[in-house]
Image 1 (cartoon, rainbow, N blue to C red):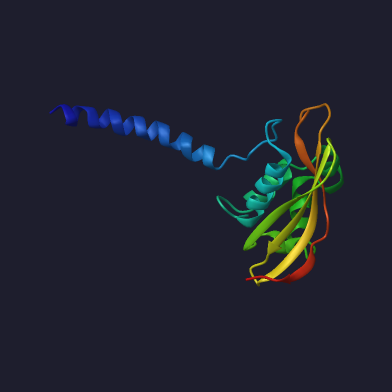
Image 2: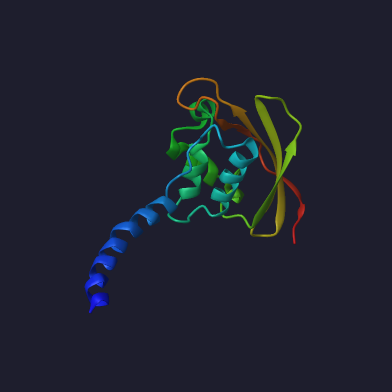
Length: 158
């Protein structure tokens, strides 16, 4: 008898709690001073790799979230940025097969990485990705992307 009386309360509780967990899984990661430079690049590359998960162009929106304010001024607003990423220069980044991020020596306020990305077609593309520490404003002390070079063919993948 006790199980039957507790079951509706348990189901109601799960019904209230689970949607909160689901919403968190689809929230964008926001810039934070605790996120290291390489993590910023990894967050963006993983988002681009799974661009349409959990929703269409979620990865593009996540990448935009870590665009440095100066970068946003040059490439934004978000719909314009999305068009650029879907274009011929950067389109291969979307839904790519794999990537590897290699740190390049930098300075205290700017970090650069060589990124090797394998496309779904098996080509390996290479590009430089730079993040910079924001000084002041909404994103004070956060690492955010200032530049991504045009991808260049680096060879064949696996």
